[in-house]
Length: 636
View 1 (tube, helix red, strand yellow):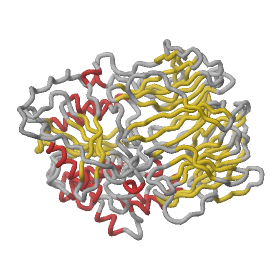
View 2 (tube, helix red, strand yellow):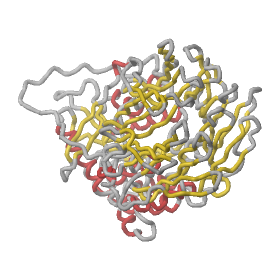
View 3 (cartoon, one colour):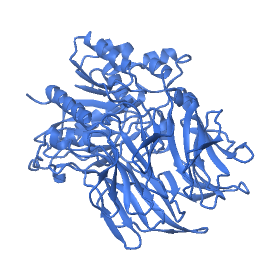
């Protein structure tokens, strides 16, 4: 929900891109695509989390093929996958093979409650919880470069803050490296274990960077400054001489800079015309990978490191799409990554640098679905009520034309501060396959378009960002292929809030609302945030409102207190174990809307949290949503 969780940034975009609607003769109606059943469509698999084995012959990953996420291993050159965990209830997510043997780390929570523990699967197949205890949250952070230890954060000592531990890779004995008593975010550990880089969140657009000397136990503030500047420690260089960090100081976009640990000198290291989102080195230090958030797409740059010099590395020729999660083998001769396209779900690939051989490890799209029947996304822009340009991602269903106008959905991303990007979305593609145009709006406050755009929604939720969504409806109507009388609004989490806010504050605008675990009462949500969000509580209050100081404003912008105004059909989807937007948020809005005599449907999943980790639930949610939309938006 917080921008701090999203890890991206921003830009004020430029020209308006509206297709002309002129007097030319109408073109023949495009051919409609084959329509698939829900079972055909959602037999598509979801995968992620690649890691090479010590001998580099296998790749560890997770997949939901079994009905919930489990951990698998597959030959690094391609072949049959072997299932390594067998959970039928809670999702298991692959973290990493051990660098020197076939043990592996994985993480699991309980029913989507986000209280993840870190587990090891031993060579004999037994599982061991490395972070036992109740109501704690743990995360793997990194491997020691020689594989003799790994680093883990956990909030077991204080539910509000995460401490950093070093685990021995053989005995699992641990040593406390950093006791976190000031609410800092642990970001990077130097390879020589002498330094820890940390960040402190002040607001969503301003933070500070610190350096901890492990031997001396001293904490140094690196970034005293005035004004709003974002600093994000990314990684130490392989020689442990420099700290690479991101900063938007003096720029709309984040650039990569280097801090010399000996002299304190800062130099710019890499820049782009958009936000640099991250950078990191391969385990052997030979390669550095940078990700750039370029106009709704992820672009990867890779360099080969030779001392102070860096040489660009050409990536292999790939199918259309975006690369995610690049990882390297121990020797640095192989890399694994995921490739995601508009019409192709994420698939895992490996590339052998020596043999110059590319291998596709997975085929996730359902064999029943022809990708030509899916929709290629388009980046579009429109001007909002005050002239601000709003970038968006548009999916137009096959068959839509001036003579066959289709219903449409304004899709609002989560956050605040999230971003709708290009790439495969099972929900959006399923909607398009059922004849709905989808506009994934990046309303003001979205990341990826400059820090001014990113901050433009602060203390304005339920107002200006919502009005962008209203203008999106006007934009859709101008295209000539959309029926202006059949436009819905839909979103999850913060997008769910925007959905219900639209229905309460602009009840005439949209014919239907789809609220997927959305906030309806800011007072309750801000008062019930998980304790481990403490480090950015202040930033959350600065952006959305303080439940004490800004009580009246939060009541004015919370749809629950204005539910009597809702008069259009609404469907609400909720996970019973959601720790971010608790179930009572949805319970209350459903009850309030029912009192208006408005059609409302409520679907609760008892084994989910803030999302759909299980394929059967994902399929059921999408089925219910499309049935609801068909009932209220399709011409009968």
